[in-house]
Image 1 (cartoon, rainbow, N blue to C red):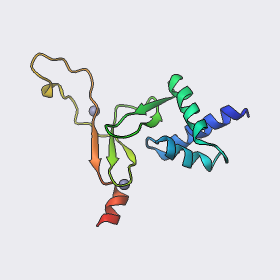
Image 2 (image 1 turned 135 degrees about the horizontal axis):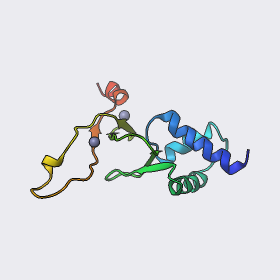
Image 3 (image 1 turned 120 degrees about the vertical axis):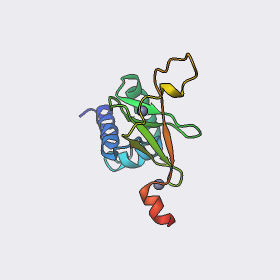
Image 4 (image 1 turned 180 degrees about the vertical axis):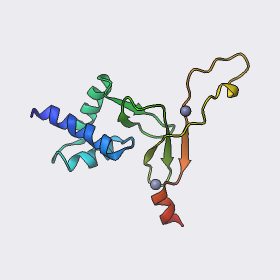
Length: 126
Ligand SMILES: [Zn+2]
Ligand SMILES: [Zn+2]
């Protein structure tokens, strides 16, 4: 298989296996197990082309670096663990938030990020 295709497939697979959005550093750690010697520059290059192709989507969090998830997931939200800095998918949604919008405004979409401790970090903390 062509080298670039192999790297890209590996990165795709890493995000899929993780089941949650990954930062470039996390992607590097996961991908190294599949493609020995892969470097951060390669990760960034692939992220860029995968974003352009619409294969992955950036998850931007206030005060944090971007994470990347596979595109095409149904509407969902995220949970950011403040201890391990991992981001998880949240499949629940409070639903229509039109009532939160100011009088006369039309709501078109929303984003929601929950913050706290993931179950692993909670176990360590208690
Ligand atoms: Zn955690
Ligand atoms: Zn929602």
